[in-house]
Length: 278
Image 1 (spheres, rainbow, N blue to C red):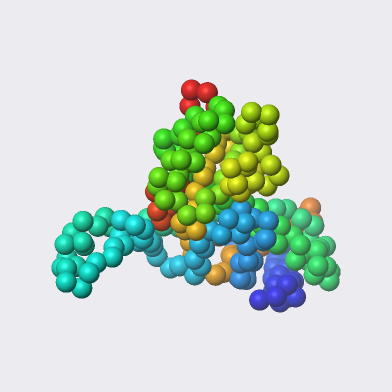
Image 2: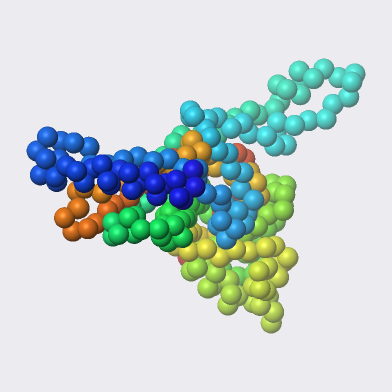
C-alpha cells in the first residue's frame, strides 16, 4: 500500500466519522480509531542492523526457534567411521524468538491528512518506523549484553587480551560495537605513542562502530551475522484516531510492530566494559 492509498483510506475514515458528534462517540462507545496496514520499511542504511549484517527474518507467525549452527554442530568424518560417534559428541541448542510489541505514537494536525501532503506524511511514517527500529536495536543490543561476563578494558594490553579471547573462540570477522562512554576512553587510549582508535578501525585492524543505542561503558565484539532478529508479519499496524481530540483539530497515529532478537551462537561474541569494577 503506497502513501496515496493510505491517505485515501484515512480521508474516508475522517469523512465518515465526522458525521457523528464526539458526544455521541463518548456516549455510545463508537470506536474512534481505524487500523490501516502497510509493509514495514526496509532497514535504513545507517541502522545498526544493516551496518553489521545482522540476520533479519520477516513475516514470522509464531514463536520461532532458530538452531545453533557452529563448530560444535559441524564435523568432518571419514567414510569408514561411524557418523553417530560424532553426532553423540555434538552440542545442539537454539535461540527462541518471541514477539515483543514496539510502538511509535504521535499527534498531528488533521489538516495534514485532509490535504495532499503525501511527501510530508511519507516522511512522518518513515521517521516513526525508523524510531521503532532504533528502539528494537537498543533493546536487543543491551539485552544480549546483560547477564554476560564482561572483561575490563583499561589499557591496550587488556584490549589485546579481549581480542585473543575472540580469536580462541574462532569468531569470524569480529566487529566492535561500543557505547559513547566506552568510545571516549578508547579514543584516548594509546599503544606506546600511537592512538588505539584509528578512524573506523582500531590499531589492531578490527572495525569499530560507536552507537548511543548501547548504554553505559559497554563493548561487544563479535560476528554479527550470528545475531538473528525476527519480525512478525510484514505489515505495520497504523491505528488512526481522528475523533478523541477532534475539537482541537488533532489526530493521532500509533504504529504497532512486533520484533525480537537473540544470539544464534553465543560463542560468536565477547563482552567488555571500560568501567572499573563492573
